[in-house]
Image 1 (cartoon, rainbow, N blue to C red):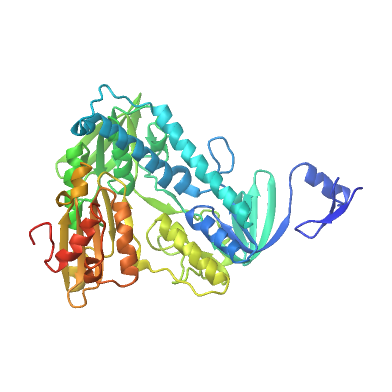
Image 2: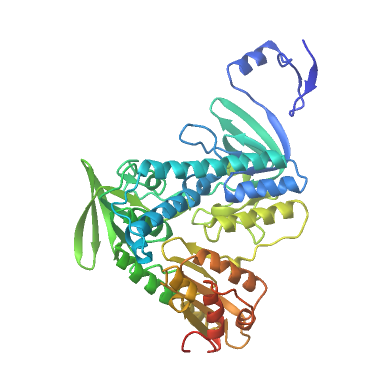
Amino acid sequence: MGSRRRSQSGLVTTNKLWTYPRFIQSILQIGLIIMSEKYDVVVIGAGPAGYVAAIRCAQLGLSTACIDEWTDDHGKPSLGGTCLNVGCIPSKALLDSSEHFHRVSHEFQNHGIQIKDASMDIKKMLARKDKIVATLTQGIQGLFKHNGVINLHGHARVIGKETIEITDGKQKRTAQAASIVLATGSRPIELPIVPFDGTRIVDSSGALEFQRIPKRLGVIGAGVIGLELGSVWQRLGSQVVILEALTTFLPAVDRQIATDAERLFRQQGLDIRLGANVTGAQQSGKSVSVSYSDNGGDHQLKVDRLVVAVGRRPYTEALFDDRVGIELDDRGYIKVDDECRTSVPGVYAIGDVVRGPMLAHKGSEEGLCVADLIAGHSAHVNYEVIPWVIYTDPEIAWIGPTEQQLKRQGIPYRAGMFPFAATGRALAIDNTAGRVKMLAHEQTDQVLSVHILGSQASELIAEVVVAMEFSASAEDIARTVHAHPTLSEAVHEAALSVHKRAIHRAN
């Protein structure tokens, strides 16, 4: 029978066939495999929240498994969740490609570079995007292997306080864990009146796979996703119309910054229609007819492709048996406390399935926090200093409350602003749009928030995140030496401007 060894489930096996009775062998041979595995921690979901939590748990010496059901276009398991597969990473790859094309076509001549008849190879652009995604998803596999995380593929369902059922095709198994971390992320919201067809009417994932540039593209939703995807295809030559039900552009953004951004986006060619309530969409041949109404009445918009980008909802379908006792709030999010504990002891939830912004970096920090808590260490996430970014051109980044929110809360403040047009580096790179706006407490001078519209805002905001984490004052930033010439000098000058001491512009 060959040498004998002990499996993870504790059952004695041989190197030829498991030593079960014949009827059990028959079950195994037809593929209905039932196994039981035990770990210290099982993480459900391998997106930015889940895979980070799993790696950190393993680093802390906990036996850890991560279960994920995501597959690529070829049906192969692919780690990284929405962010790496069809979200943050591929969208930024296309944004970068489209920005290069736009600069070649419209801005290089300002530098004395003459390029005529530039064209875009869409297939090559998409192939580059796919290669980046593959590199990063395979990288997570390598990180799992290096840190000793067991990767299990399939749909996971919590069926008991410490029991998870895993289903993958014809295979079923169970896993036992003292601690369970739910990190299943979110999925696009589908409008019942505008159902996806996967070709003409698509969600954000579909908008990353267009094989040709739509002559006319419709986007429902002027939020982060809608603006980013609209920007990609507008730069490549599409006539983009964005329909937004709200009458205020980017209501979560500081009004002054949002107003500047709206003006710039319209100048770039984005047709943004606010107060537009979509009432339906009908496909006809190779086009889609969208019905919407606004203060001017009812309208019809004919487009080649329609992207629905009205937000995302937490993905909790079939995630746990109701008898387990995990509670949801009235919006479908898993209820958690300040340390991401659910209503069931030993079960945590992080990322897009819980309260707070649906941001990859927020989920990752929660993953680190929960891992430390499970290992018995102290940990927390400071939700007051989580940065937000919109990767348009120019980028928008902010941290902390808007000026409008401070006014509503009755918090006294001072404002300092500095335009990028007044910095030497912005002029040198021919990208002077936007400004830095800093709000500091009137009495204590502590920085309350910073709002940036401009080139590389996503990178510039990091300095402020660190400063606010340590409760820095505007004076602290003003007295910090910034390299010259850099875009970061605008942050320095905004801090000086809080006390009307800006050097390179009139206060």
